[in-house]
Image (tube, rainbow, N blue to C red; front, top):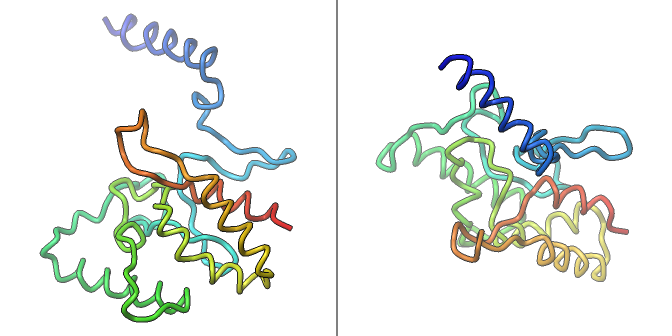
Length: 177
């Protein structure tokens, strides 16, 4: 059983994956002009005003120790953390204090590595990015179109919600002229 389930079966499934889905089987790595930029599957920290911010991470995007914070909804520590994130996000994006911030910008994902945010969380950042990059009104419109174009629908139309891969969005953002 060890040889069958520990060696033969994994090699068989890996072989099928390599033939049928080579990109996904190898981690959905993004290579641009011979330079590995990251993976479509793992969120990356962005601290600069010229890029879209992704979800917060309880592990600071450490793939070795991925996981949530395990803080419950009644936790004072979680409440304080959410208030800090909200205040920081509002200040960073030049928003008013009463702006409704999407929850995915305030709460870390269960894995701490989710590369997606909601379209609303992306749209709320457009003004900051356009300002930081010195975009004209036309370029700002292109940015809005880009967010709409990269919005992914729920899987099979049923599972999950509309989302945007922030890593891929930031790569496309660099292509805007």
